[in-house]
Length: 116
Length: 115
Image (cartoon, rainbow over all chains, first blue to last red; front, side):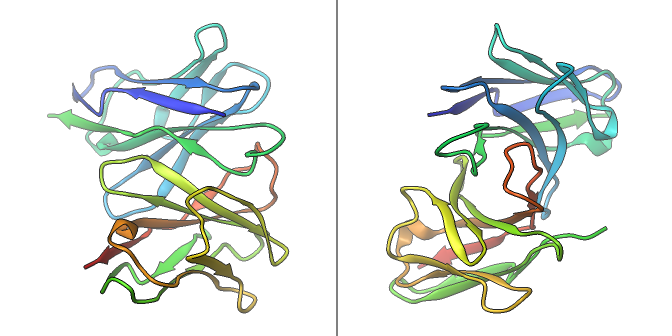
């Protein structure tokens, strides 16, 4: 079985400040990892994903995340927050093989507010 | 850019009634999914569908639920007899293949309220 924990249901940052959204996972096998963003009244949009290869993954809108196997983490960062980054962010895992490998398992989400 | 669409955006129904939620996946995608999010809770997987068969389903997806691809474009989720606890946002998603590294593309959701 797999699970995802996102620390902080709400995070507020000032415009221009570092964004750090935390995600930890547990999984019976090494999973693939995803970050999705949801803007108001829109669907979930993929920001970035880790499957294989380089553990530092770059995504859209200046976001990046680093897969740390030893810490079972996949934290999302952006050096400088923009007002348009205000949204809800979801971390998700997917098993690479076997039963349950079709589904994404999501965290509860972190709502990011950006203060002008 | 191609996108997944869902109709209706909102639906209100009475307990015990049947509802059908509709989705149009991205046209060249072959795998389809339904997820739901009860207010304040996690997005949860319901079912995946490929080649007119369910490939995987969760414990939530009981006999009250069914999925269908009635034609070449639509993918539907039917709830036969709605319960209060079915009130949630329902998301449809699609992907080109079922591989675990494949991106699932999500629609905007249908908010279902059961009274």
